[in-house]
Image (cartoon, rainbow, N blue to C red; front, side, top):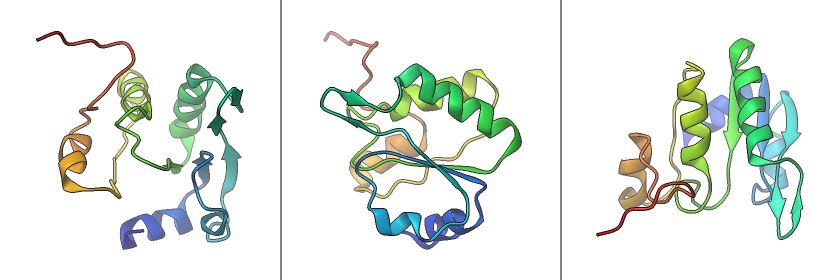
Length: 120
């Protein structure tokens, strides 16, 4: 985990996390923690509800959204960013993955998106 992410976890007001986030990370924050994880057939919240939660909390709080794995490859990170941008909520993506994925991710470009199909 980067120093920047560690700092944000310590100062945030709300930490929204998914099923792949290690429980030891949650001990590093005093923030309100909200689990929104999804496992095969068991979703704590729909994606639309997660997007709305990010928007509502983002209006008044410093929010950290922790996603395990690669959130911009089949992880719906792009959907969450699009929802925040549409709601004019400032956000920043801090990748913790390879530069091949991180570069487009920092620009808000998901490598996959459920509602976008490109045929070549």
